[in-house]
Image 1 (tube, rainbow, N blue to C red):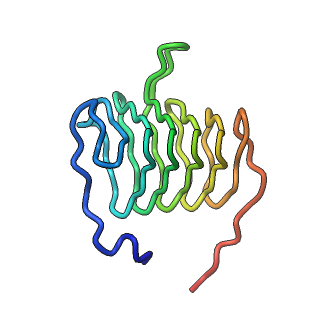
Image 2: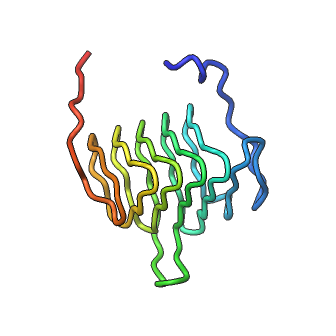
Length: 136
């Protein structure tokens, strides 16, 4: 386990208020946050239709995660699977699942599901390579 998570504690989240680390959640009761997560400053999470962030997920600063979009009226649960990483300034749209261990590059627009163990980036997001999984 990464030493920075040795003393990890679930953050105190208040409705539509910046956390100690300067990120915020709307509809906080619909957010499920796993252990050892790292969410960057100024990230916005709209959990109206549920957002699940599993264990070990890392989210860069200035990201936006939407479970509802008022522009195109899309709605849906967002799931960030175990150990995935989201680069800074990325946008995740409603109904998207990002697979275990996948890495999404900075400034990406994620409007479709990302399978496990891939690197993806772009506007809109595209898979660019598979990640080799090491067996222990």
